[in-house]
Image (cartoon, rainbow, N blue to C red):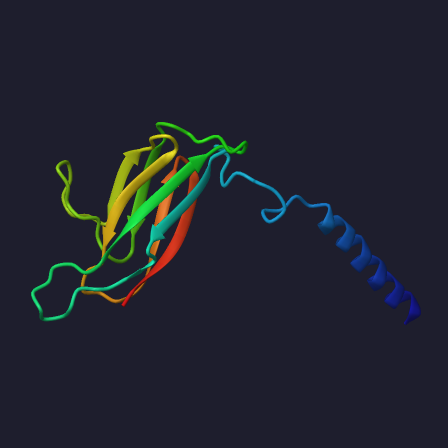
Length: 143
């Protein structure tokens, strides 16, 4: 019994020391993919008012999406192709696109911005931004 207890204590100690030496995602600025890109995606505000049912409104409140693309040294990446998709709401039409659930564009000074508008659906949506093999997500609410 004593021998088994000592082995268990020794194993916990060794694992604890090994885990403290790890350079995990909460301990340093690790890239989100092998490409070395770090992504940060935000929606402001992250709570949108949905279109009122049976009112004839086609859309509710809108928010600004911002995707920042940088390298591991914090330098912003200019000209990176970013794709953004949503599970709730739509990106409104512009001169070059129709209303859609996904957009693509190139960063300027490391930033891509666009608009996302709520529709009649309510719930929690997920925005997903992708650059090469790096992915970042954020959630938002439509009430």
